[in-house]
Image (cartoon, rainbow, N blue to C red):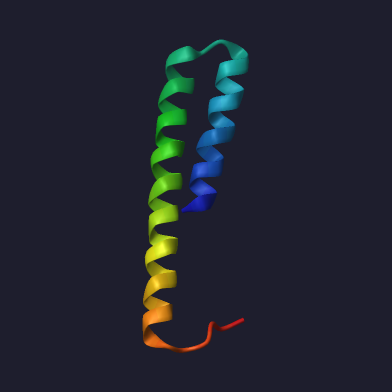
Length: 58
């Protein structure tokens, strides 16, 4: 999911550089949403791992 947010961020940068404001705004919004969903899932995953009491796998 983090990879998708990076892809949308790159699309936003390229389209902003080429002057496509609407596409850049939409891609930026999608990238923000995906990043925060990824962040929330990461925190939930870390909390669940800590509550189980098992050491993290490396």
